[in-house]
Length: 310
Image: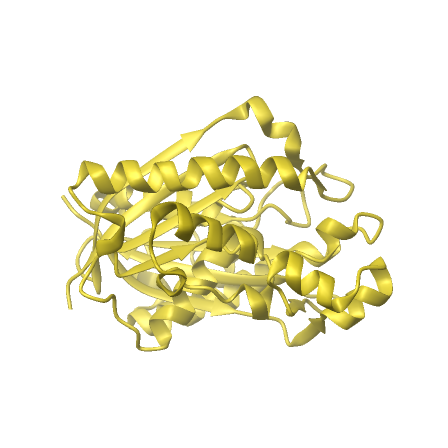
């Protein structure tokens, strides 16, 4: 059995927060922030807006793009690391908002890599559930502290969604690979009450090694060279990390889709926001497959390989 990427969707708060605003709060200059992160602005959710609000908007955008209604969804997978409650997570609230009273809705509390994990699981579960809605939403602006400027300048808010279908789509999912190494989990975590704690150097070192290796291994398994990939859709963690991955794989930087300059790091939502923007732009892979990849807290990381069929 096979599954397909059928549609993407996304939602972003209206408020734009530029580097100058953060410079005044953190003591870092706007130029330093841009050079260090590749970010020039990010979005912040307004007071009263919840993770479920953003996730619902992205989900509806995705369903519209797929030409489906909520009744067509057999399973919801919702990733967030910044929900308002320790439990329940926002998955059940999203299902209720979509008018679904018995459709299973499962939370994936995996920051940064959660949407990638969701797509990989959806690929395996689609033969049973049909259409699976993968949603990731984050409000990281409420989970950072100006006392840690290296972290505060990175993050923004937003949501993305992906419809994985058993029946049809614009790209066939070929394979996926997921990994976990909990030995360095203390380098990136968020207490239920408190602010994000991150050893940025440790995270970057692990991500810059583990992610290209995972991509290379999955491509090699299917006889695909990194240069043959049409587009790399990745978690938008840091502009320098995206460039590092491209360099390690020996592919042009423009082959790695990037929108981090405009949205910052939106944790698990960033991969889906990037994928939705890439798809809505009308871009098509340059005669090659699609790679989706992410690295995040846990540490969890993984890769999904898809093949454009249009």
